[in-house]
Image 1 (cartoon, chains in turn brown, blue, green, cyan):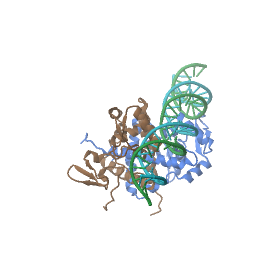
Image 2 (cartoon, protein in one colour; image 1 turned 90 degrees about the vertical axis):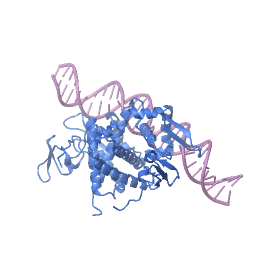
Image 3 (cartoon, chains in turn cyan, orange, brown, yellow; image 1 turned 60 degrees about the horizontal axis):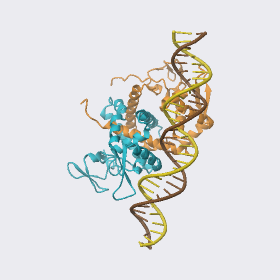
Image 4 (cartoon, protein in one colour; image 1 turned 180 degrees about the horizontal axis):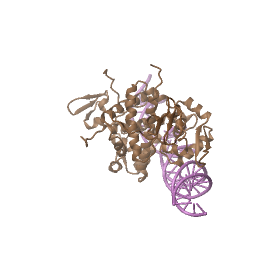
Length: 198
Length: 198
DNA sequence: CTTTTTCGTATCGACCCGATACTAATAAGG
DNA sequence: CCTTATTAGTATCGGGTCGATACGAAAAAG
């Protein structure tokens, strides 16, 4: 049983790569009018969802799997276009904080880069989607462990997260209190909870 | 219930894009020694699995979501490197047929581009993988319908496929008889079976 | 026998991307 | 303190992807 050949993981890989290619093509079409490349839109989408620990060039580079030099160029372009704002961190003056500008927010709102995907998944039952999310998330976590890469996630399934009250949470790693909405943003210091026995 | 906001599809999209990015980074690392770009390896993998109707530049362009001009350049490079062979079609002398050369086969065997993925998914139960495959496949089919793109698949779930005997199948669209192994290759004239009631 | 359509190639320019080298700020270690 | 090492980010360069456009040749349509 252990060494049995199972092709299904490869089928899943093929689907993921193919969907990735198609969504990139979608992004390319979306960005044509504004002369934006797929990676630019991916960066904007990330910044629209990153929390306070994760809105830096290095975090974005880790997220996209690109080098910091490459990402630096991307950010330079987005800055020139007025789609993002960069400002110094108060404490560590090496780090640059990033956020979408009003124009950047507006652009994402107009382009709706996830619209095609939402249409494509509207007839899939919530339960099947949850199962698929769970399987892919596990693949992602293992893949990143093997690559010593940064894991991203939100507080919902993070082992550092502590619930202080009905609406107030706390990050045990950084010591900050986090509001409800902030617990649903993407974080780069995410640590997966240990799987509990079913 | 109908208009309820459900974020899970977006979570799934994020996972697919992120896994796609990471696998592309993996491909980039794999191809560094041979100076091959991710798209080159993707093309080789496709050609290693394409059936007799699908081993053409146009089919590859549809599969990757790129233009035929772009793919033509990719194939030129792979040909110069001796990784593929191109030859004219006997009947329609416009079309070019492609196949891996011995060197191309050997390269794929050595690089094992799916190895990291197989490791990452080895602890996911076959059942969860099957569910994820099913959900993503549905998303892919809808996505391609909306984009009027070509759907790819194999005979297992194709409505053109007819079983003649234990081991011999037939493609009702093209009229050819297909051996067992060939029914598991990727085909560009795939037509999904109509979903049967459960 | 045109006219149109389809498959593939050639050329060009914009720009992505990694590699390398660099600066500046912080951390570490006496 | 005063090195030394590490980390965040930028600048520059070259190879190569990619879409757009134009082109050629074969097949299909009429």
